[in-house]
Amino acid sequence: MPRFRPIVAGLAFSLLLQAGCRSANSLASRAIDTPPAATQAPPAVPAAPAAAPAAPARLPPLLVGNTAEVAADAVDATAKGPRGRSLVGLARRFLGRPYQAFSLDQGPGERLRLDLTHFDCFLFVEQLLALVNSHRVSTRTAAVEDFSRHVQKLRYEDGQVDYCHRHHYFSRWAAAAERQGYVVNLTPFLPGAVSRSRRLNFMSTHAASYAPLKQPRNLACIQALEKDLLVQQSYVPLAALPGVMPSLRGGDIFGLVTRVEGLDVTHVGLVDGRDAIHAAPGRGVIRSRDLVRYAAGVQEVIGVMVLRPIPNPDGQAPAPLSSTPPSSAP
Image (tube, rainbow, N blue to C red):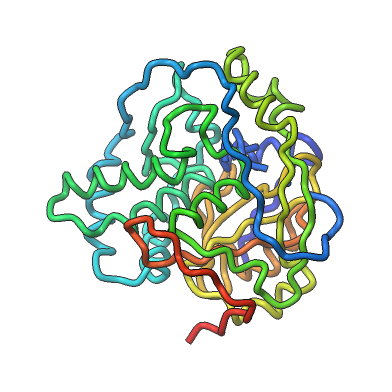
């Protein structure tokens, strides 16, 4: 029963997972934690720091390898399916693809990088979500352009391609995706869910681990962002996860909530039945049997967040959820 188990501990472990999940989405950037609060409010998302220095000249999008061809094929394959089923189908299609850490930080400057040949855990989820929202097109070229547009909207605050506007923490990425109508955060409505207040500052306190933070401009804007970055994070504790599984559907997005200081989530993936499909450091895109057992076996994990993709490709905000827990999948 394959399950990803990190072979390093402490800081090295958190850096490894964060590198794979666009950390803090880098996750180079993406991260939250503190005692459970009484309310179940969705995460607060502070705007990108207005005082950041001017962004450098924008570079054109970069499609790595045969990403354009793979994207067009994927859009064709998911043109008529519901979001969840399409996400699972795509995730299975990419099983075995290699893993690459810090893949967004490969060049000298920030650019919209699209890569369906290698993944970290965050890019795996983000790009597949963009693909299943790119099917209202008439040509393969238009499909790739639409894919590019959705990735840009998901990855950057206000779609501005800039390191200082990239969503570096999963909670901020999720809140932005929900505002734009890509997902609904189910977590506060799931049985047994709790909430905590979490200060996110992992990047500022580990700046040497992120190559882009060697640039004074990038370091200044991340320090400004994280100076008072406090979010409210709902999660399902590991002990309550077995009771939640019947409410989950194939294609739901999970985030492993961590106790590592300064971070919110250290790994993300997709639900497939009772299993998880995700991009794991050193192993690539894999299936881990039994999400409950898998999550319990990952160091420093205390619970799970769950997002549900919704059929809203035009980016319209969905109607608010009621306080009723979601029904079980048929």
